[in-house]
Amino acid sequence: MSKSIITVVGRDQVGIIAKVCTYLAESGVNILDISQTIVDGFFNMMMITDTSGANKEFLVLSDELEALGKKIGVLIKLQREDIFNKMQRI
Image 1 (cartoon, rainbow, N blue to C red):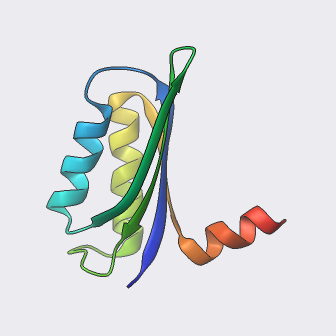
Image 2: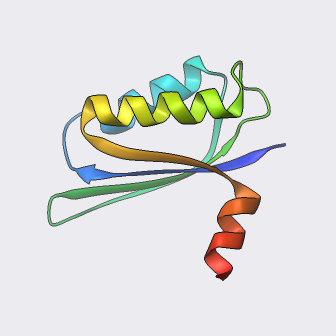
């Protein structure tokens, strides 16, 4: 298993979860856990995913998720679990 963390942040709007999840499903990425909140109109989602079955390279997934975020008006970041964990320790 190759775990990765996806974060999505931006103004709340209809369809954010659907668009991100559709992209992940089409790319062969499995969602292991998902948490989302809306605070004062701002949407925040964190997903733990398994990218080992992805039909695209990790950097392609990252770039395409970032482009999807720009298209729908949110910021989407994809990070490998080990890098995410190390960043949280700093």
